[in-house]
Amino acid sequence: MDFEYDTIVIGAGLSGLSCAVQLHENGLRVLVVDAADAVGGRVRTDSHDGFLMDRGFQVFTDSYTTASKFLDLESLQLNKFLPGALVWKEGAMREVMDVFRSPLSLFKTAFGPVGNLRDKWLVGKLRAHVLSIDESEIWDSEDISTNQFLKDFGFSKEMIDDFFRGFYGGIFLEPELATSARMFQFTFRKFAQGNACLPAEGMEAIPRQLASRLPADCIRLGTKAVSIEENSVVFENKTLTAKSIVCAADSNTAAQLTGQPTSKEWRQTSCLYFSADQPPFSESLILLKGDRAGVINSVCVPSSISSSYAPAGKCLVSVSIVGDAAAQANLQETAEKELLDWFGDAVSTWTHLKTYRIPHALPSVRPSERSTTALSGSLFLCGDHTTNPSIDGAIRSGLSAATSILSAHGK
Image 1 (tube, rainbow, N blue to C red):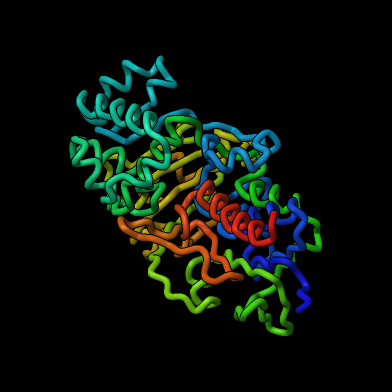
Image 2 (cartoon, one colour):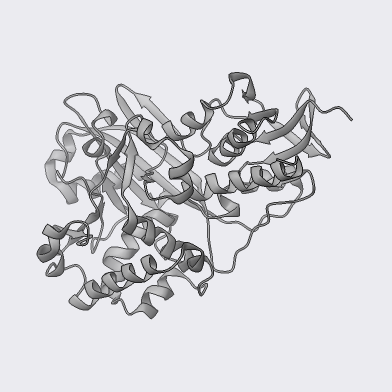
């Protein structure tokens, strides 16, 4: 049988693009299709009146093993957060820094009110632990929830509630910390090894860079796959054939196309953007809710990290809400009331730019969840739902699928 392509990749997110780039650069005829109007999947950035607004608060970590090797980090012009966070505690913003990389903050962090001295010693112990073992050992470690892991490690309830629930609840998009402790240790290790960053042109610069490594005719946008059959993909008005097919869509779409059941839950978030004349705080850090009540989990000023996120004379403020609270009605009104309580009357001068409600922001990673990647000899599955919900996991899954296909081609 004559095939039109060696491989058709369904989905132009990080996984699909990474897979396609690897196959193309090894000489295979590849086609990437996506129903969206641009590449990126869930990693997208909108430009409006000089502001860059990522669709949901996202960061890139420059210590990602696979992504750092596969991407050209220099051309992304990464701008770094400081290693730590601000936490609301006892009516004030308190710094909690990585004192190993910010030694001048040792006294302020050690004797600050977020956690007790034992908690701070345990942070150092945990840091030493995750850095002393191979990354593969993390994924083979005891599979319990992050919340249980932190309790077992000895952290106080106050430290878990004031810091971990805000910081890692913001990463996992669930404040209960039900996410697998393996994922927690992985992210803790990455933050200990490197920096959270924002590309100068927004997070979408990452998938755009991958797409630039493919010929223009390799990517067809606005093209929705209807079903997958043996060695073919059915679209609304045509059918295309290939020796192998990679389904790099999200877990729900992949289940519909492949006929495979999906057990993945989704984590949701809402992100509100505001224009301000002055930043609510000057530090290049994220601000966590700490001991404050309310729906807001964290506040960030992306333009303080990368000035390209806002036009001259303006600041971009990002407000993140995670978990069930992200779905409530009147979110803007509720958030603005809380922001007034946080930062005072200056908030009344802010201009609301946009609210992103993202019900399918991240696939969950609960203890004991597993995913399969090879569905048959010619059909492969990739995406962060098959590895872990991170940029590194997404790229790694795409490269893994490409490796299997290249092996079948004798390359």
